[in-house]
Image: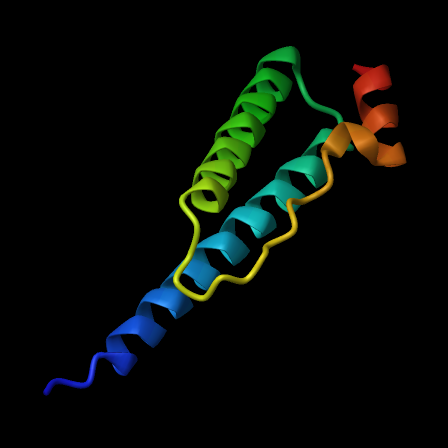
Length: 89
């Protein structure tokens, strides 16, 4: 009989690392929206945020081996500084 617990833990660790990376990317993009950006740059950042959110949503819908419930990150527009950045654009 083969022990697969190491492989399962590796898959869980990989999934957790991917979720963490998506969260970090979203935070970075939201901070970028609080800076002065050209319309083109702002459009690019908004597109990247949408892509990161979609990737996270797909990971959440796909479920996970560990069964842990990941909390979705707050939307940039929900953050007061995000609204200010959008209003300044």
